[in-house]
Image (cartoon, rainbow, N blue to C red; front, side, top):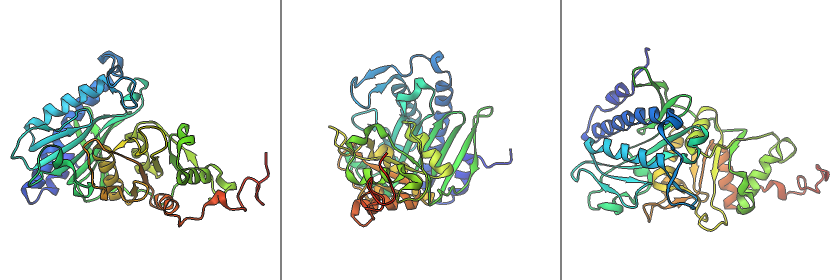
Length: 347
């Protein structure tokens, strides 16, 4: 095909240091597992009731059959990788693997499992960290996302793709299913700094805090509002699908905290989802915020800690952060653009 394979890319990157070699070996182990997961998901109902709830029934993040299958497949694959411990969204505590290995892996084995039966794109998100020199167990994972050595996600959709950063930009690899090989199809992806698209679950609008209301209200008012241009809203409910779209054509993804019980700190898991997604976005020239601070600067205090996540095109994320800080002009509060303002008549 003339395109560099994932293995070739990692071999070129791994020119020095044991840790780089260990990272490459671990990424390749995850990639091999993803090919099997992609095939399994591609069978749909022929593979069983993948969306069947098996645990945490009634909660907002119910555990599905596919969550368990994916978790077990990944844990088994990493037993032979240079990984000291695996922390999974599907397990209460980290799983010890090789005590003297140089790496830790944090993973969301199957992101978007609530959509698997609807045939919507789903995926796997991973974060690779260095082993902690003095801590073990849960404490070893309680470090800010800026400590990551590699981060990525797989998307199982019409194409199976890997989005990866090892700190040298964000790159996209597409799976050739005939040869079970990932080939680089986009090098050093750049998220456009401006956008006309936003992704948010608008059904929660009544629960949002004021800064999010202001930002979305201004987008909704389009060319007639303070933004002076129209916006499109896109939302799949699978973060990997929404973030991949943003990497492809720009946009902003918002999953804020809100007033609902259990959602004050959002729903996105900091260690398993927000940190790897944020580093990927930043390496592509975008921004990632928890509303009032950079996601990668947040120091976790719990393994399954949740966080608000606002990420994507740089200028849009900066605008939201300015609203949170009180620096941004609050469009709909202006008499020029208010519902009874000079430039708008009541319907």
